[in-house]
Length: 261
Image (cartoon, rainbow, N blue to C red):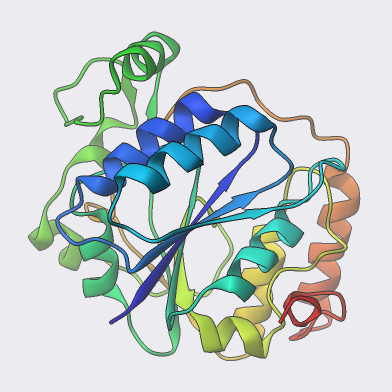
């Protein structure tokens, strides 16, 4: 199966550089990487250009002007530029386990989107990772929280896999879906700006349209580099939009992906 890996980023080239390194070390490479850049400056552009010069992986830089937090629109623009049938979304501060892409492909399933988990690195471990370009972490590494999520086990992954259509814990930092399913609900809602709930609202429309949730642990592992929390200025408004989608069983957003196709 052909895979487009989409990485969201904003002005954190040191983290993005380590994430790209972890992608080059994958047991199975993605067919292309698309950087969904929400208005970063030249340092991020230089990081991407450097990777393009040295890597064999096709990389596309999808950039939009910096006009506040617009992750939904940035992801839509990247999805519109993707060439392949399966989309994996990660954030630009997520170091990927070396089996990450392979695990996602093995767990893909028609009629489902797949939600993975993450391991949090503390501030000191994050600093060390950025300085040394460290990408290899395990259950025994220092500075991890929710450490059990770092266990890679096919047996446990299959044993604890669940299929429950709720929005608890959904996140776009470790998410995969078929592009055709995304197109049918018109992707992310561009009207949702600021941090929060753009992913939940998108996935709610997928569920309303008959696409179920597959939740995985002990597989598709990623390590989240520490950072300060984003501002929540628009969270109340975004939650109202999400609740409206849930209450009215909305399947389609008017201002979405088709704007860029």
